Each structure stands twice: as structure tokens, then as C-alpha cells.
Amino acid sequence: MTRESSSRRRLLAGVAATGAAALAGCSGLPFAGGEERRDSPVSLPADAVGSIEWPASPFPTAVPASLAAAHEARTRSLLDDVPAEPELPNAAVATEIETKRERARERTNAGLPDEWPVDDLDAWRRRREDAAEVRAAYRAATGNDDGSELSARRRAVRDARTALTGDLAYRAESTAAAVLAYEPVESLLAECARSVRPQVTYPDDPVAEPFRAGEAVGRVERAEAAAADAEGLREACLDSWDEASPRWASLVAAAETLRGSVSRTRASVRERVGGEDPLDEEDLSGTVAQELAATGETRVESAVEDVSRATDAGEHATAVVEAGAALAEVEAYRAAVGEIRDGQHRAAPTEPSVRSTAERARAAVSEAVDAGDPLAARLLRPGLGVFGYAADRVEEGYGSAPRRTQASLVYAALYASAVPAAAEFVRERLE
Image 1 (tube, rainbow, N blue to C red):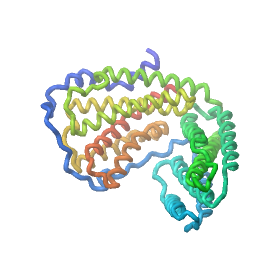
Image 2 (cartoon, one colour):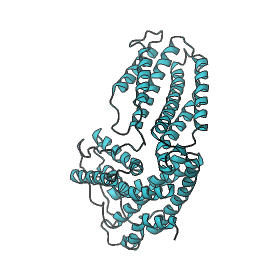
Image 3 (cartoon, rainbow, N blue to C red):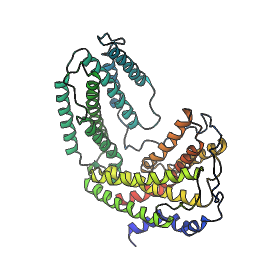
Image 4 (cartoon, helix red, strand yellow):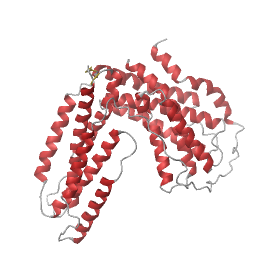
């Protein structure tokens, strides 16, 4: 037996054990007579879900504080160039610029997400883009034409991105370290490429179209910031390693191998659970189970597509991470189908059931990162995102959708439980 088939069997160990019983469990379930269900009248309080503690950042070294500091300084400088009460001939434009400036300043002064340092950089790039957009709109409205300067900046950003991409080589102390170090770098380079495209062109008459001018400048500002972050993160890793060798070839091989593994695993699970729509003979309308099944299927298809997209784009570190996440998504969906066939998730959600499900998800996340594995921590991110979205929705006053909230929390728990095996599987492909 090859290492590939052996580890895939370990990853899918639960599938064979539940397959026959699950397929036989379609009869004798509650709500089988087409009985109409109604949404639960329960409305969740803002603290029903609570928060979740993110694991330590999987990035191989400390993210330089200078990167965020540079973004903040640039953001505040851009906003300082715009008067609080701009005096313009067009009163409507003046009011809009004043409003945009105030909103951008509020975002600049707001706290950062309690996630990872690379996410702080993302938040600052968005803030920096907003500030540049406001400043450029003000300059355009006051008769300043920045079109030529913008073209020169766009060329400079493209050149910087091309130079960094050409010199990437994925140098690291190990292939696993290369994945965790260069996945955010690849993401930043892709962000830079998207933002530097002239999808919004600078207007010939900026006074007549100040906000179009602002948007065009803001996009290039963000591209410039992304290129700077990509270079800063790469240099931080290289400076922290005593020895770093090119890992490009091993990453390419691992990405291609994992792409095939994801495809085969998806096909295997689909066959074992009963096809593309394994629950079509059951009446799940109005239940948490219905939301859970829909969530799982959608996420699996999206995850598999993400693997192919990253591989085709030559984003090898990203492809490895996406493959690990896709394997965990497939297993989470398999487990969800098994639980639904076992009769779970049929009762109307209540505040206590939502709270206990949130606690289940927190426990699963804690267990998944108990060994301190940075790869597992990185693969956990999609599940953390599902939990965070559910928590935010409830906290913001959308507590009248308890079925969706509870389904999201169940899925977050199932996904987290699948991460350790997926991380082990990926790591074996990297060695």
C-alpha cells in the first residue's frame, strides 16, 4: 500500500464505518410525513454565540510592526490633506467628500479584528485605500489633475510586483514553512495584481468626476500597499531563518498531488454518502438539518474550486493550504450527513441549544490546536470564519434566524474536528 492510499484511508476512516448504517437510516425518521415546519419564534440575545479564541498566528515569524505603522501613518497623512469642511463650488460634492472623510477617519480610529497580524495589515490596506480615495476626490474637485502621476505610480507598482514575483523562489527552511510563509505573500501579490489593473480609469475631466478619480487613485494606493506588505513579509521570514533553500519544486509537486487527492476524496465521500444529493428523500424543510446540509454542500464545492484556481494560477503555497481546507470541508460534510441521518438537528433551536452548540465549536477548535501545530491553525481559518460570521450576525441584531445560526455553529465544530487529520495528510505530502 502506498503512503498516499494509506493516509487517505486514515483520513476517511469514519466514512466506511458510517456508510452502510447511514444509507439504511432514511426510514423511521421524524417529520417524514411532509409536515410543514415553521421557524422557531425564539430570538437570540446578542451574547448567545459569544466569541472564539483564535490560535496563535501560523506565520513562521513575527509580522514586523513597521508594516502596520507605515500604513497608519500614510492613512492619517492622506486624511489630513482633506479639510474637515471642504469649500467647493459644488455643495453636493463637498458634502459627500466631508461624509467620506469622516467615515474614513472613524474606521482609522477603530480597533482591529482580534485575529492574526496579517489580518491587521489587511484592515490597514483597506483604510489606506479609503483615505487615498477621499484625498484624490478632493484634489480632483479642486481642479488638480493627478492622471499622469497615477499612470507613473501604476507602472512603478507593476514593476515592483514583477520583480518580487520573479525573485520569489519560495526560499524557506522547510517545505512546510514555505507554505505558511508564502501563502500570504501569494495572496498579497494577487491582491496587488487585481488592484493595479485600470478597471476604473482616471477621468479626462476630474472636476466633473471627482469620485471616479478618487476610486482610480484608491485602487493603486491599495496595490502599492499590498506590494509593500508582500516584500515585508518575505523579508521578515528570510531574516528569521538561519538557512533557507528554494522550495519551489517541492511545492509544485505537493500542490499537484494534493489537487488529485482532493478530487479523489470528494468522489469517494460522494459515493459513500449516496450521491450528489444524499438527503433528497428526507423532509428536512424548516430544520437546522436543512441549513446544515446546504451549508456543507456549498462549502465543499467552493473549496474544491479554490484548489483548482490556485493551482492553475501558479499559487503553489495557496494551493496546498486550499487543498488541506478542502479535505476538512469534505470530511465535515460527510460527518454532517451522518449526523442528520442519525436523527440529529431536527428539533427547533432554542437559546440553550445555540449556546451549547457554540460551546461545542469552541471545544473542537481548542482540541484541534492543542498540539500547537501551525499548519492545523492555518487550516482552521475557514471554520473560525464561519463561527465569527454567526457570532457577528447575532451580535448585530439578526438573532431571529436561529436555524441558520445553529447550523453554522454545528458546521464550525465539524470542520474543526476534521482539521487535525487533514493537516497530517497535507504534511505527509510536504515531507
